[in-house]
Image 1 (cartoon, rainbow, N blue to C red):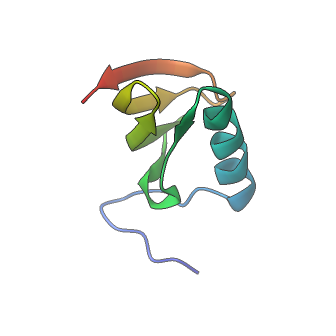
Image 2 (cartoon, rainbow, N blue to C red; image 1 turned 120 degrees about the horizontal axis):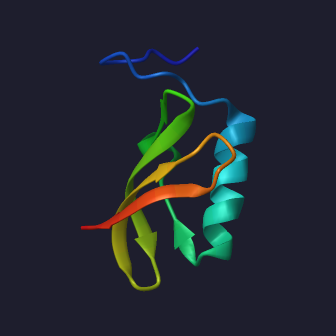
Length: 70
């Protein structure tokens, strides 16, 4: 079991896989260590896309709630 810090919730492996697959369709990728459960959704830090680097917030259904260019 992974030890969580700062109250971060562990993201189940199947959700990480689904997030990675969704990002691939957007020509993006993220290190699984940068995926954090956030309430009903997910917070992704340092997402690398074809057009730059972003931080993203995803809803529970893995649609993009917010995408901020870094």
